[in-house]
Length: 480
Image: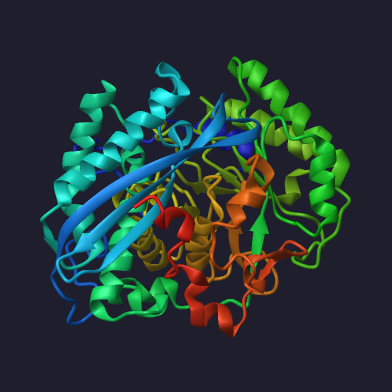
């Protein structure tokens, strides 16, 4: 069945239930095929991380933040950001260990509804409020691993978030984004208490199958937002970047959006369509489109794909991320391109639903949905033979390493030669003071922290040092 006939003959997938307060109701699968494991849906709930892990009592908490300006307004999801808050959360244990974790907030990405009804600063303050509330809840609590700690507080924080934002439909990702620093601090504290100094040893036993690789190369994916000049895209290709992430779903009505997206694709394809790479079978650059849920109907998205075919760009489309909004329960299996779930895969349960709907890849975000949740999603995807890669949130240099350390261990992404992992990193394109922010990362001068010809080259030293994630930055340490 061709794409257009597929669109005409398929409609909404009727979900047998909805997600409320973190409790999953039944969901009708998109077909009778058993493409999803029937045994792994709840396999990671309340599990033990590593054998003999200690109980850890949190006796101290603290938080702080700073605001980082952007080079230009950063456009996606039909909106624009002008600054990004960097927050940090401190956890101290009764045994005297003190560790802090870093978070990059992104209100527009995690819940556009909150972004739309608040000023940019007010939206960021609401998310930071979630962080500080989490610290209040867990102070004087005992936990045995960070995943269990997160499971214990997530529903309470979600209810709290709905209250302070006045949004009863608040997306769970808004809460997870706020928890990134808390979760990272919990992992570092967990490692200190259990004598762990290597990321491989930190990975819970149940999640190790999904994170068992040690790639020697990880491709760096730059982001081309709405207003990135085409000359800058050409410059990125000239610098060796070969996997382009291009934002579509521009502001305006659906027809205005489509016309802008088609014009943008035409302009970009004319500029880089003839560029060559050694990392694909065709030798052409793979395109990665991210619509952030802006397409309301299948037919509209179909017209975009038809245009890509008309101008000769369709065969270069490697993945399309989140073409439809979360509430659109569409079967996406018949478009002829790999459709990726990102922000709609809030948790492992939501990721399972998306796999049932025909999504054939998942963008992991340890730097946006927490390391704990990302490990659970990675294992769920692995069990169901769905490939993953790591997408960015325009994070700071330290969090790039928290993202890359997962990307380096995932299975090689299909269609890319050389057995590469994939990680998006676009902070260098967007922050005004990126050079200064690099100095906050204790391992920024290591060769494996630098991109060369679009690639992070990861040697034995990288894996020995675990990408530097156990190093505590003096810049953020001063906050506490």
